[in-house]
View (cartoon, rainbow, N blue to C red):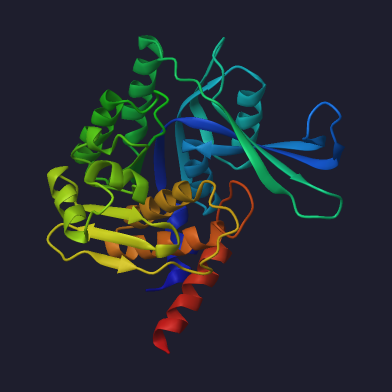
Length: 330
């Protein structure tokens, strides 16, 4: 495979629609100054807070980082976290013109507190989630669905990114799947514990925990193949952390992909978003499920060695792919 032509040229010709739940990933960094007199706890002096794109917004950011057009559909609140997230999307060259800012609604925000002493690495000590699980009103949901149907007309792939916050409900998923089938483009699902609500998609990228919830902790490779068939998928790509990936493809024996890079990740935050973004781009380019999974595996191995919610660049992906190709040839 000509990796340079694929990553530097073909990716840039593709357009991927991402519909789903946008999350503001915030990283609050501080310096431990002393122990409190009020309780046996450290006092953290705030240094900075950085807002990055999480959830569906992170998948779109990874697509844009690789030079493709990322069309994002979802909602944020008209609050400080939402505005910070929208600015981050602009900086990342994501088309967020179809993202709805809702007055009076809070943006789902995940705050990771990273603490350390002077000149020492910051370590995550706690995560605080501000989850907005209030249902979207029918007018907003209908606007999302209309935007989705229109955006699909010129897309090469569709991603459904469901974090269970309402933007990617089953009806929206049904519309995405039907539109993708009609237009003969792949539709890829990443759903937080609701995978069975999206039958008929082209493929999906659940993690091991999500598969265990459906099949049980002792599931086998043949169980994954059966789940793929039961849901009407053409393939199922299970991410398994430092154990790599498992690809169950219709009509073929399941195959394992070893993890790329270090077995000891620096930070796994948002790695699944990177995986589905690159997997979708591979399928958009007409690659097989196996080749697309290989691309995604390399991308995942890159971002878990970065701190915070991260994306992969074309040069990073090419470097990893070329290294893997050389290793395979030895």
